[in-house]
Amino acid sequence: KSKEWRNGVLSVILKNQNKCEEKYKKTHIHKWTILDGDVDTLWIESLNTVMDDNKVLTLVSNDRIPLTPSMRLLFEVSNLKNASPATVSRGGVLFINETDIGWNPFVNSWLDRSQPYMKATEDSLSIQYPPINEVAKAVFFRCFQSYI
Image (tube, rainbow, N blue to C red; front, side, top):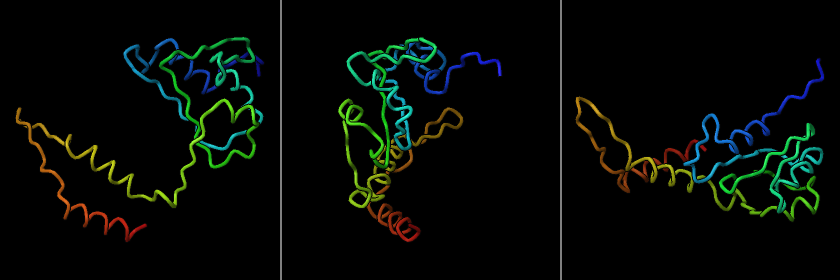
């Protein structure tokens, strides 16, 4: 009601990444901002300066937030019907058809990542869980597939 400028979610995240504040550290190799949803012509045009060679977000308040080399933007969209050619040309487009991929890669990736690191510590003893063998994977996949 005061008509005073307030930063939105994206500008706060990008400022924190730029200044290495809150959870963002200088030691982070990449700082990802993932935007999931349809491209809206009203706001995507404001991001064109971020996606071009300037790599600077200019806000209505005239604040300028430069992207550092470690900052990354990822747009996950279902289609690009509202995106202008200028917007599409500034970003890389990767089309992934969900019928071609399915759920198997997600489960395989999760199993591969989580299995070697499952450890428990009790009374200063470190217990390494046995690896999931191919039979256990097959049973897991059959159970998972029956519920999808």
